[in-house]
Length: 308
Ligand code: NAP
Image (cartoon, rainbow, N blue to C red; front, side, top):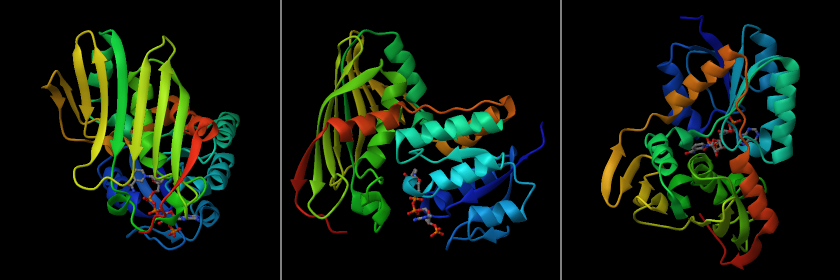
């Protein structure tokens, strides 16, 4: 096996503790050598207040994972790429489409790899859903992504700020799956509900049309208590498909045809090692472009104030 890749983590918060550290600890492709964060720390490795200090002090670093919120990622990514380090971007890869396009060009200029990671694409039943849909004639599709923001994002102010995407933060996970399993599509209308005291939407209803004219709807809601719904449904000539649990379970006409435990982040890191060793980048901006289009085309409704 090749030498492990020396990697550093930037922005030590919830997703780093929940997913990145456990995935890296089990992956022989990597040696975690440093972390940079203003407050967060990773035990048993050197910690630095910012990426510049980390790059200065740890020249053996070959790659960095950037896990801070998307609004604060571009400068760190630029710094890392110009220092010729491979870069893994948490989802969403940036706050705008054009900044990520710029990072893609910078990675190519510096001869390093850029990975726009979409963790939900690695959910266990997504490939089975893609194979099923490729073997059918799709009539229509619907995305229902409804969760409780108070449960999943307590006190995360950045998520409500401009560039935090609001309900499109989970919604972009749905789009990362939909753009992988459905034909190319584009938005025809959208309605976004903004709480009167927030800069980002708490709900959205979006309609798409695929390039071959099929209707696709997307219903996002961040105020769903009780059972949570992360489902993509499709009516096809071979039955009604339901991809549920955020891509973890696939059923057709009520019969489960694929279900297994998730391993999204281990698979993301495997893919990152693969692209680093192949000397390529993996940057698909389709999910981010749809979010940008929803904000561009969508009607903005003002709704009741939201308090944590
Ligand atoms: P978080 O815990 O609120 O933020 C991560 C860390 O980023 C914070 O602990 C903070 O560390 C740093 N940070 C916050 N504001 C910053 C700023 N203004 N400038 C520089 N650094 C800042 O968020 P998270 O839940 O881990 O999410 C981070 C990213 O992962 C988001 O893009 C999110 O969409 C994605 N993600 C989250 C989840 C989830 O379930 N939470 C799942 C998948 C993906 P310091 O204060 O130490 O600098």
